[in-house]
Every structure is written in C-alpha cells, then in structure tokens.
Length: 570
Image 1 (tube, rainbow, N blue to C red):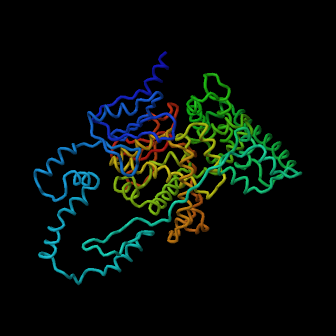
Image 2 (cartoon, one colour):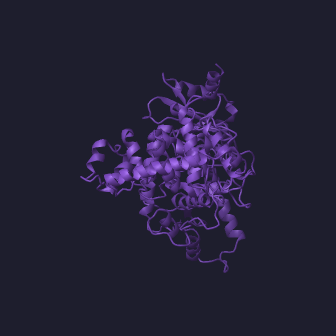
C-alpha cells in the first residue's frame, strides 16, 4: 500500500503560482494535450496530461492570477511575466516620454527592452556624441581591420559591414539552411536475410548500416544484428567462421567466470581490489532497472546473471574492472540477448567503444565535453554565449548524457533504438555529440527566456529526462550535421569532430600510458572532473528528479553555487 502511495505522490503536481516561471503546451500532433510546468529554480514537473480536455480551461483560470505571454521563438512556450503590462502602458502615457502609442511601445519594450529604450533616446545619444566627443580618433583601428580581428579570434563569426552609424553589428555564424531529413522503417527479416550469400557472408554492409541508421532494427532481429554492431561477429565472416567463433567465446567466458568463482574466502581476504569491485557490483545490481519486468522481483534470476557478467568482466579487463555506470550499459544488452554468454561478449564490445568514458583521469569525458563546446560555438554562438555567461560553458550538465549514452534520458525501449543507430557510426562516430546539440537546441528558448542560471540549467536538464522526443531529435541531429558539413568556413577542429577530415596527431587523444581506468582501483574519495579554475556541475546519486526513475544510479544536480563535479565512485 505504501509503495502505491509513494508512486502516486511521485506524480503529484503542486506548486505556488509565485514560483511558476513558464510552461510548455503539447504540439498539436502529439495526441492527448499536456502541459509541462517549469519553476523559477529550474525544476520541471512531469507532463500533466488532459485525456478528456480541459487544458484551455486551466490556462484561462491561470490568467486570472498571472500574466502570460507566448514566446516569439517557440509557439509552445509561455512565459510568466512579473509585471502588469496595463500598468506599464499607463505609466508611459502619463509620463508622455515617447511619441509611439503606448500599446505598441509596451509590446516592443517587453519583447526587447534594450533596443526600445536605446532607440527612444537616440537623439540624446547623438547630441552627446556630437558635442562631447571628438569626431576622429587617430588611435581607433579601421573598421575593416576590427572585423578581420574578430573573425580571426572567433572562427565562423560573421561581421556586418552595413552602414549603421554608431554601431558595429556582430552576428552569429551564417550556417546554410538546415535540410529536412526523414527517418525510415526498421531493418526487417526480409532485408536482413537478403544480404547473405550462399556461404553466409553479408553483402553490402554499408547498405545495412544505412537502413539501421534510418530506422533501427526490428526487435525480433536485435539479438542477431547487435552481435555484428558490437563486434561479437565480424561483418565479413561466413557461417562456418561464426560457428567456430561462438564455440571459442563460450569456452573463454566460462573459463574466466570460473576464475573468480573459485577464489577462496582466504584469497579474497587478501585481494582488496576484488572486494571493492564486488561491493560496487552488489550495490549497483540491486538498483539497476528494477522497474523493468526483466529485473523486477527480489529473487529474479536475471539479477544473478547481471552480477555474474559484471564480475566476469573484471577477469576479462583487469585494468578497468568495474565502474559505477557500467551496469546501466549492460542491462539493455542482457534484455535483448537473453543469454549470458552472448550478453557478455556484446557488452565487452560495447565497452571497447566506450572505455574512454571510464578513465581515472576522465580524459575521455573531458575531451568529449570540449568537443560539444566547440560544436556549439559554431552551430549556435548565441546559446554558447548564454551558457558561458551563466557558468555553464563547460557543458558539464551533459556529463550523464555522454557517460552512459543517454540511458537515463529515454524510456527503456527507446534506448534500444537510439543505441543501435549510434553504433552504425553514421554519419560520423561522434554523432552522439551532435545528438546532444540537438537536445540543447530544442531547450534553448526555455533556458534563455526563463533566464536560467547555473543551478536552474542543471535542474532543468535533469528534469527533461524521459520527456525528449527521440525520433524528432534524431532528425534534428542529422539535419545539424548536414548543415555544418555544408558550411565552407568550418574550423579544422570541428571538421575533425565531424569526421570530415582525418584527426591530426595533436587532436586525437588516445589513452596515454599513464592513464589509469577509473576502476583501478575505485577511489575512496570523490575526484573532481574539472580543473580548479572552472565552476562545475554536480554529479551525484543522492537525489532523484521528478521525471527520473527511482532506481537511477546517476543524477545531475547542484547543491550550491560553487559545487564541483564528483564522480560516481565511493
């Protein structure tokens, strides 16, 4: 009974109207109407659905107590104003400072107070300039030279040379229009079997990857197709090769499993590293995706399989061992494979792709966050500048996204589709970074128009978990890639991130000889992700957001303004 009450309480929506910052309405083509409320502290509630209508009636009631305006940049977003436009209009009329009608002036002032105010006092500005300032300043650089310097310092930045007295207009990167892209249907059984020849070799591998990138894989085929995507089988193998390979993998797996199974208590007493890893695995298995039917229940044998695979991986990869977050990566793989040996080797292949995320010095994570930063500077300098000016320019709020590839941002069935798309390495190996860009682009209006600061940005990014429209983001991400690819002034570093040119030796950062994986050994004290000069986000597992499952082992939130990033190892 208590569990049911807790579940209901989790989805209760209750707040003071004075704390309401904005709200988002559902798109017309998204079925049932819903409203998402966003508070001033950045908290975002789960969607409030209206199965039998009533959303308009609720908003009409709200307008009796608060003043609302629709965002000019997002028709779904409504901003709560903290002033009364009627009183502002009346004040302008009484003061008679402006020649424009008060209604038009108020509208302009609310939309862009700086431009409206400066425009109204332009005569005063011109008078002061003409009377008090010298007409020529020999120490001032020529206009064209200033433009060249700006373009050198800010790659991709365009400077307007139009004749505007008193102003030098610097605009954002002029990227080509974003092309429309379309998603396709999942790879089906007929398409899959038609690509095998008489010896069981796959023909036209790139064509298969393109189909998977466009629409994923039919669930009935995943256990077979994922073995190729994750390196269990080679794409150029034939049937006989695969039969021999699987027999070898079965033998290798049980040999490694026997190694840790046969360690005596006396040996374990002198093996502190193994004890630490067992302790971490014990804790994480007990809370990994327990809301999923596959792992639900106290005596679920699948939990034991999850545990055994993670322990065996410690024998397979002594250096990396186990690090918190790896159980999140294994869980979907085990659900698809439903076989201990196959799940292990697919998980091992997945870790080959993502092991850089778990290095002790976190060099791989830092590099990817820096790459997101570089992409955003070119793609949307306005949003980048906003984040930078609000202590979020390091993009550490994306930490969880990158660490476990959005595992906690989407529903379980969606993450299967997203991962298999990412594993095709199309249109580039860093497509997950562009996918991050697409999510931030979708949240731009909410972040900026709500004037979110450091803490609010962290909370909001955490709260949108399980509300992101995956297919829409995939289309947007591909469009962004094509848009940037067509840009002729793309900086070399961005071309390397997008895979348009081979990475230079200085930009490619393979793990150094001295770089130690995070799990070797698990540190007893948290270690910072950032250098001391950077204000960072917090990564913790103690608090759960309104929209994140209660079995989540990774959360992002801010405890204070000067909070630092901590890792997941205790």
